[in-house]
Length: 185
Image 1 (cartoon, rainbow, N blue to C red):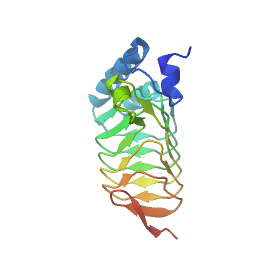
Image 2 (image 1 turned 90 degrees about the horizontal axis):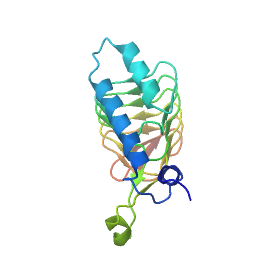
Image 3 (image 1 turned 90 degrees about the vertical axis):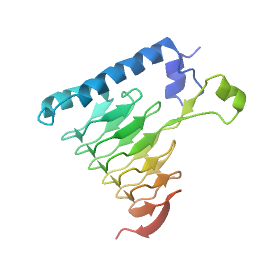
């Protein structure tokens, strides 16, 4: 039988109160709390903490505190990644950003979701769907990327957009739900 962590990573229904997951979540909370207490001139310490927290970290990565995530080990960021203040990643499944991605303040990325069946929800079960963001993507402040979406290379997500479906390459999307408003030449 698969562990609850294996089920979570596979996007299957799992029990988030499993002791292994509770311990992993606690460890992520401790690392993010230490990260959030760093001073602006402690870039080496921030880099070390992100290396400990994230599944993989590219070169020249900047995340401005405060930052929150569920587990951290499911977060993978490429080279020259930048996340402004107050970003939140609910990373029960993989969250992947390519190279040269920029996130405005308060961007939320959700992989966690809950069953539609009320009995399963009442039982406390949940599951996730991965979020993938290509290279050279700009996500404006307070935008939300929902479970299971992919964002193509060179796309721009406008501030406050709620992305519920995949975003093609080299387009601008805005609104709730986010819609393509123009192509990028």
